[in-house]
Image (cartoon, helix red, strand yellow):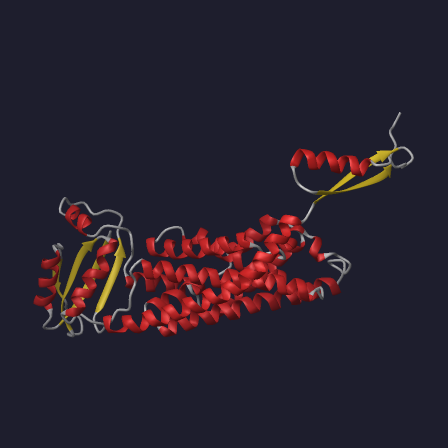
Amino acid sequence: MRLVQIMIPSGRREAALTVLDGEGIDYAVWEETGRGDFEAVVSFPVPPAGVESALERLRNVGIRDDSYAIVLPTETVVSARIDALRGRYRGNRISREELLARTEDLAPETSTYVAFLLLSTLIAAAGLLSDSEATIVGAMVIAPLMGPALSASIGTVLGDRDLASRGVALQTAGLLLVVATAALLGWALRETMIVPPATDLEAIPQVRERLTPNFLSLFLALGSGTAGALSLVRNAGTTLVGVAIAVALVPPAATAGLAVAWGLPLAAAEASVLVLVNLLAINLSALVLLWAAGYRPERSSETAAVRRTLLSRLATIAAVLAVLSVVLAGVTYASFGTPAEVTVVVGHPDGASVPGLADRIDERLTGETGRDTSVEVVYVTSQESA
């Protein structure tokens, strides 16, 4: 439930109360004794799905932006009369006004955004180099990418160009900052010998995972964007969903930066493709869900123009994703034909080899698993105590 409090401008009291009576909303009214611009304050409870409808009808009778409206979440409303309102306003979708307020909270000031993004990049890069999945996930908890990722979509569907532009700018600049920071960190670690210069970056499992993007990556990003928009609309679970969005963006961007530091342009390009695919898929799914949820500009006269902008943006994103999907398809297809690599270590008193052992193991594994395998047998000299 929500408790809405509105300051009624002078001369608008009767019109406002008529609207609330027509909506079947119970309210309390008291005189306003402030500066004199307002004559009364009205307070009323309403389900989350009814806030937008009530505010729109009040605006139509002159309660506009020069007034004040406060929407407060409430734990409990004890009244048998509230059941009728719950039946009228079904669902958990928050109002357009609450959506904008929550978006502003999720998109921090630029200095805060940069600071947290730098910290998450440093931790994520360390996790990649140490092959620590737990460290990478931990870094995503502080990565502030959910706000910009969703604010761009919210600004688009609501016709708020400033919000949309800021969201796009923060996403683009933020990911470029991640790449640059990871590249600088990788260079510094190699120069100071903290990480041996001869380290094979592509052999680290957590890094290699980001260098082979496939269609599963696309599904992850689409799911993350959908979950992000849904959690915001339903006001639930935004922290955990923010981690999922960050996981889809920061680690591959950090991988691209590390590949630059290691002088691996092809690996940097592969990781960059994954970043771009995930970024576009998150924005695509968020745009579709927010529009399908019924969010529109405050002024109905702007809806047609916003719809055209939305369709144009969706078409552009879909076209770029279609091109990148060719790359994903190639990587996915190639992964199907790549033999599983198996290394067998055999201890022997004098390190002597057993002729044909690798072929026999290969045949046995292929017969049992049905997959092509590539077997390497390594012989080492071994000793046992008496």
